[in-house]
Image (tube, rainbow, N blue to C red; front, side):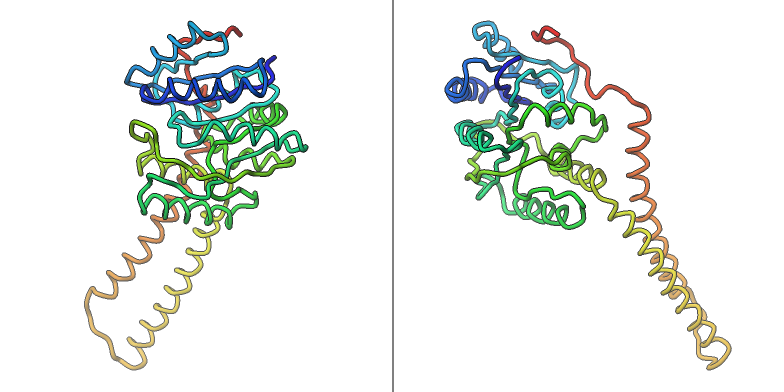
Length: 309
């Protein structure tokens, strides 16, 4: 059992790993001499894995988990949580946007009695307006529609007590959203603020497509608001359609003022059909998640690791 574990998911981070290792070693060794750095290679296509293996050969504190393919960031973090042994566990990305030095401050906060300390961004350098804007809208929308108090302007960069990790390991859902799961668990949680730096090197693996999928996972995992929206839309459309039918009958049989044609029919069909497709799509998202969990496949497949179980 270690005093502290640091979990680092990596995907094509060959230009960042050496500097990250040096920074983390310098920071964590000041906290305790009993620590481990766990790198999870999430199907990298560059030399990330070979670099980590070379470091591990010369540093007994470094461990690696190599996936058989790319399973995704949240799954990589989950694998680190499964394998780590620390009484305190921190999560940090490998791009050096989140400063390793902040781990000391977060660890100090835990000594005040908190079980979770997360890092809250005051600013985000190196990101375009659209990414900042969509992230801001998403986190605030999610905070409003969920019953769980999910902190805004935060990522996965945080430190937590072992008891939190033990609970997370018993939450087997396939669509992981740790930023929601950890607040859901509860206990005393607080934050420290920081300015997020620009990525040190390389390109982010979070494309807009992955960000959209991540957002959908977050919403469907912690809110039934989309289903309520689908139900409410059905009632609204039904009410509008009923009024439309009354008006059509009134025009046809009472005032005899109507035009034979397809315009109103097409409008009605497209309007109702569009709402129906939206509702079916929302319901389908929830059903697909139920199906994935029922299949009960493993979250990830490990090709090789230097961790002795």
